[in-house]
Length: 329
Image: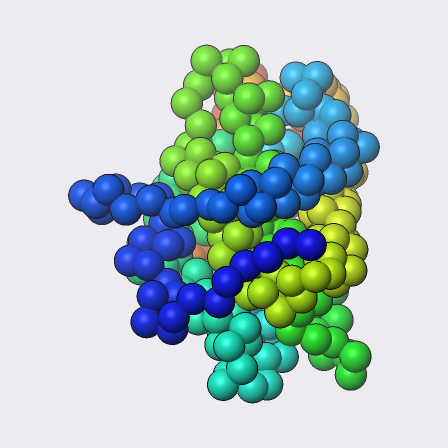
């Protein structure tokens, strides 16, 4: 159904195939008409699934708060730091690199990881978290939550199954890439634009870049099964659903933490003020929601140390702000 010609190995990966960062070149990714149609179908499939998501309903209605997004992306930071493991799992399943489609898949997947590291997307993501009010230089916030651990491990567990194939795994990974593009596009239009704020570079870049990444991952799969879509669409649909479920689970975690923190600080602040985010910096959000600030290799904490540090911070913050009537509780 969808045809893709296996290219000569010497030109499998172009100089900037996985990046839209400025390079002083006129080189552009060429998308065939069949690929464009496939993307249209898959994007519509992703959009339909996201329309059912509580997270995206709140984005569309303007009800999502800065504090909620801070929690979501603070957790997402844990996931993205191990994303290379997802690519490695796909490559491990490609057992014959002499086979043209598998070779193509390995080269494309490796190029993605290499390019992200070369272009220092960590720095872009740190700026993104800073835009949500967190201190400069963070790549994640707190410890990985149950939703983050579940989302991270589910794909890896499937890749360990005896029946796993590089085709299914790579198609699922491509679905995640397209999910990120659609997610970021919705945030640009549903959250940042209505506020008159420019989207952080990491969000704006990946709203387009991940479409290229999706195609990079899909092309070898299409080449292997040019006359069938049975492997492609179901695998990608799973990826769309899981990404939406992950965001919904993070939103629920945030709201539960808000409620728990509000109970603990009854009399000093209201639920609405706590979850609004307009009065809270990222640091205060972390304190309120018992997240802590597990910084990049600087403040690794165990659960016990984490709790003790938070308790000390609460006491210090209460003394510091009591005279101003701004008791953190």
